Length: 130
Image 1: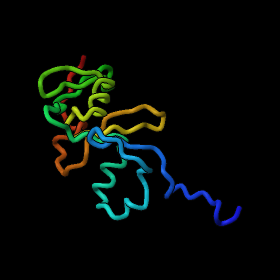
Image 2: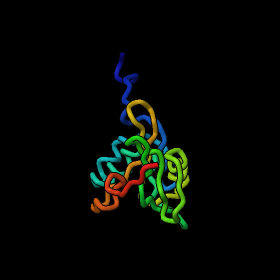
Image 3: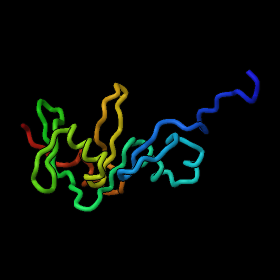
């Protein structure tokens, strides 16, 4: 292989991200990331989707658990949504301060965005058994 045909995946476009409901093209680990603050870079690039919440966005106030597993969430308006519904809401920028990541098995899941306040992290919210 000559120097002109080497595959440099860092600089080639890859998967898109969705940040606050907007598609952002390019690889999340591009060279441009070196100029961002580490916290901001990790918060926006660890998560495939970042939802800071648009007008009327809900916040998650409680986890709904079944057999120890999170199966849904209670929102700030008191409504209950499944994990799948919450992920879709995050994709549509309808939830405040969450990201959607993908597990090694390929399953999407919600994550809290780092903001220095551990009290609003999903893992620290109260839970209800359903």
